[in-house]
Amino acid sequence: MRLITVSQIKSLREASPDYPEMMRLVARFKRLQRTRHPFFLTLTEFDEILKWKLRGQYARLQSRLRINNDKIIRTVTGAALSIEHSDEEYELELRVRILCSLRYVNVAVASSVLALVFPDEYCVIDFRGWRQVFNEEHKSEFSIAHYKRYLRAVRELSEELKWLVQEVDLAIWHYDRCCRTMSRLAP
Image: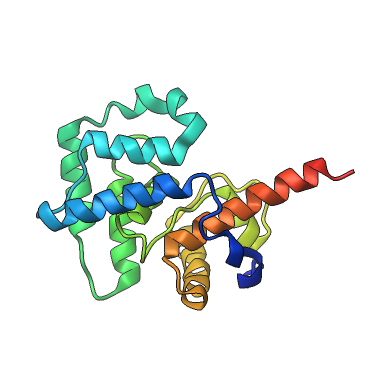
């Protein structure tokens, strides 16, 4: 059962300060998909996604993530992003598992790659979205099963709102940040 409602996020489609950067990256990857066959990410492109997803944590993790060099990033992302299967859940599992084969890449980071490359199908999973959708605090590690559950809920909202799946997720993320700020400011 999903807790957050369309009415709670309807006005937040473009409200997040991260929205312009998200849309810039989405547009960039769409352009690259038209010219790069098979599609893959370079180390620089992958790094942009990490900076966007990890924000303040990026600097702390950057040296560890560098073990994944350009050739490895191209190979792994090329495999993950080119998979197509009639069973969407199986396709998702394969894509996430392949992306998680990169060192220090977990389901949350893998979901970021998918969300920016395929924003109409996927979203980013993190504790803020999880908290708003399922009212469960302090979730920091996510499995593929968690991602499937969260993605189903966000896709339902996406269908109702007629937004990209990733736009819905970012609105939920922003809603959580606003709620938390407001609750800290309340007397």
